[in-house]
Image (spheres, rainbow, N blue to C red):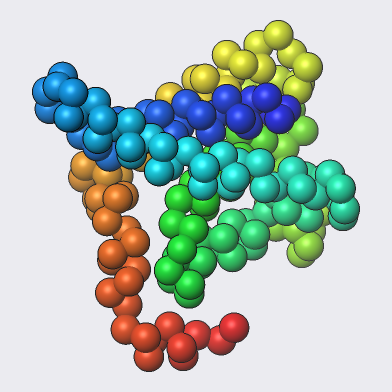
Length: 176
């Protein structure tokens, strides 16, 4: 995907996830304001996370250096270790997913262990007229999965408090 696709994905994901997490049951001014507040809360971290992997265009090897599972694990560990950046991992994860599913080239998922790039045949070139459509479809699937996780597995807006409940002794014992 291109930068426009990653921003489009992050914006749609922020709005959709904001609605899912706010769970408005009525169409009242209060519900609209609560939903708008949740969308605003999610927008910056998800957009930052969605753009972060492409920083490797300025150094290293694009679609390798910051486009791998190890970077995602590091970003996902921030809420556990530092108590912040709880939604940035979603942006990074959706960026990686878009590059694997939505583009023809794929990414080096296990770099630096291997430079082999992985992708699915469903992708399009970044300059394709269908790139935006592919982005919207992938984002819809992501929202469906995240909504199901939120409703049936664990409340995504409570993950920070769950992480905060991890005893300090456990966090301090982690090798860093």
